[in-house]
Image (spheres, rainbow over the protein chains, first blue to last red):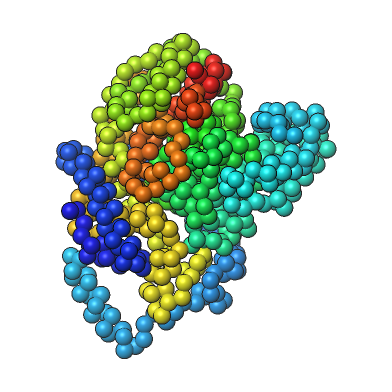
Length: 119
Length: 480
């Protein structure tokens, strides 16, 4: 088995996806299948191979990616952007309360622990 | 009137005043009204904008002004490409009511060239799929055989052009999403070199792979649309500054003496016999035109699907993090911010998108990054090297586009891995970044189209188009 149901739950947490029990079952099985297939990459020795992150990242890419002049351009899009927001409150996007004061201390502790776990 | 229009025939009809752009536009909306119910190719229509564009073209004609290259040409747009004020859903519930505040560069270039944009075409959600069955708005049916898929993810664009509901269409290709539906619907379909067309306004799936490209009914029309949308754009730093040649002017250049590589790995097991027979006949036809087939090896072909489904999902998991219910699209209320994120994403995304976000998140997560993502990036180097080494020996590479003709709706929906394998011949070129076209190459005994794929080296779109055009002129599209 490549991935356990607990790992799938953890990945859903990381990805901010609320999944039903049924979805967790299906994804556990399907991801396991897909990861077993992907295992074939280990047949290749890539110890001497550079990773490829972009198609044109070698010579010549710098030329293309040359920085443009640093000029201010008028950009009056705030109203257009806010007009399609689910809950605008000019000039902001309104969201549910993130945290209250008392919670904050506990939340920091929890994040600290989760960072430790990730290491 | 159900005439088959092409870009040159529209041009001459407009110039000779046999037809107005308004009449032609009206005709195409009438066609859509008749056929779209069964095909489900269009998700939204933009008649107001289309008629305004048509009237602009008609007044240019009335004033005797020179016509831009796509004057009056009715074009359909895949729904992952932003169109100002016109619904752009990406086939997803999470963008159900989204109206982009701006046009993608490819769209503004089409408009500047006089094209009439008819509306937005159905696709797999966020372009993730090979059958267009992953759309939240229902599947598209293949106009050639209504019980079959049109391919995907640009299935709506392919079906619209194949059914005569648009003269050309824009699609996007990340792992085969232009070429494979082109093959399954029996029309030419092309992606240029990575960076050849600006991605500005293309809603991102996998940024290092995503490309916009055209569908049409002739190679010449494919060339004309590509020439309009190609070129450097300051708004996309990955768009390249290499000059865009006049693709149409070069089309008739002789293909005699061109060496075409036939990679042995693409003709291994797993291919439908009818695809093999047609593609081999297609290669014979190219040989009869003076091309020299050369057997080549591309040893990492078999690793391309595994590589692709790590690279693409990793990039997708990052790109799709932006859909959180805060700034646009769906918001499902939650008690806390985190709760809102999770509910919005859990309900807004469909099963395939969630599956890929999960896979990509896993591949990037601490402890697995090296084993999956970095490994896949290294194998991507090897796959790209297969291409650069091949192009030292040959001028183009010829393969099948898809291992089988159009499959039945529902046939592969329960097994994601089987669906992924539909891209086995197309993902290689996507990972390498080279240009590729699929052209029709005959039909199966049941009348299902087969596609032949031609890859060229970086920025050799002209050569790819010349070969495809020569193939078309020699009768390759309806080869026995």
